Length: 112
Length: 116
Image: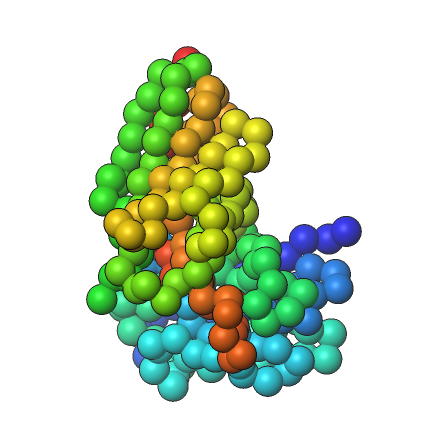
């Protein structure tokens, strides 16, 4: 059974650019949640996708958007990058919206 | 508004002794609590959880205690082992709502170092 995978591992962007992060959910999981973990902080919920639709959103601006595909993999898109967007972005998949979440290793984004 | 707080950024204990990690929360609507362990370059891994209808849950060397009146939970690791050295996050959620997303609210984390 393959766990949750994320790509890329590391990414460096400049302010104002756009970025796309990718997540492959664990086999059999239909729900993906995204979290942002700033340095020295715990992960913060960005949003969740269930069966290709957004299903709950945290306190993040609209420039954070996402997609979920028919195979339940997901993308996180961030437009107009700001320095404060530098963080570890974690993806978690689960069997259902409220199910136990299994996390991927994360993508480390640095915005210069 | 930090709804889940871990006030100790770090903890150091000797191998074989007990490690106690603490967590406080402010939202009385939380009904399910979890502890995750995180190693560098890896995602958080689920460790143990507790429902608000219980005050204790054990799994091997790990025990979680919940004090609802104090809005406080703690994780006890006995005996501590060097391999337990990691960052520990407590998290809370509301499971008993129809629109449940399983959204987890995390604390800031406590770095545990277990010395041989």
